[in-house]
Image 1 (cartoon, rainbow, N blue to C red):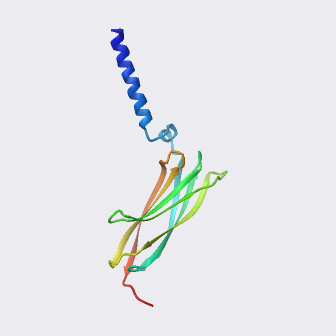
Image 2: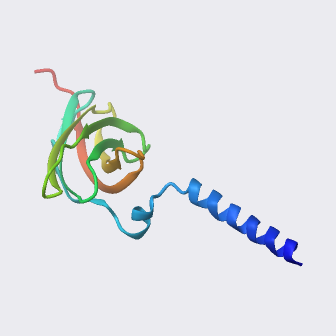
Image 3: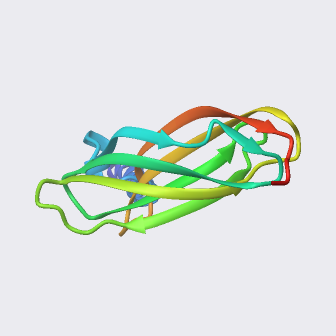
Length: 150
């Protein structure tokens, strides 16, 4: 009876250890968020010409209390979920834990005319683990006009 109980206990202990090792989150991430994006403002042209380049500037307010984060911003076509542009940057120490950063993403307008929905997805990434510890997503629209040669 004692051997059977010890075997079950050992099996349970092994299962717990395997589960804990494979969790993509640290203990701190399980109880609270070490970083968060508290605001995202976009600056972009409301109209772009078909086939022409344009820039979207994302200004993020980020708060982190436990480590130096990495920021990644993706500009995404909302209909196809295709990433058009990705920009990453490492943040340097701030004694307040507050960061305000601007990130520029460049893309080219499609040749299809009309309204075009885009999404900016911003992530705060733990430099050590590589896991996202905060994110923000914002949908917006541009109007694609016929190209006019000037």
